[in-house]
Image (cartoon, rainbow, N blue to C red; front, top):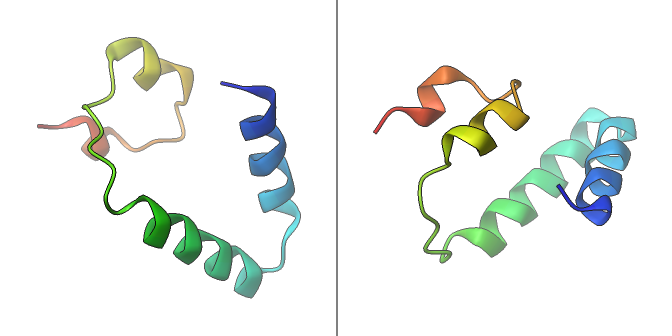
Length: 57
């Protein structure tokens, strides 16, 4: 994971709940049109906070 992404996530965790929701909404809104492939096993295990259900195809 890039340093910039780590910094965004770290700062996200410091936000109040309402601002986390606003931030998350903006990320979702901006990424809806991405054509992303499924996560690889390596990516899956890099972030154990992602629920198992996210990896089922």
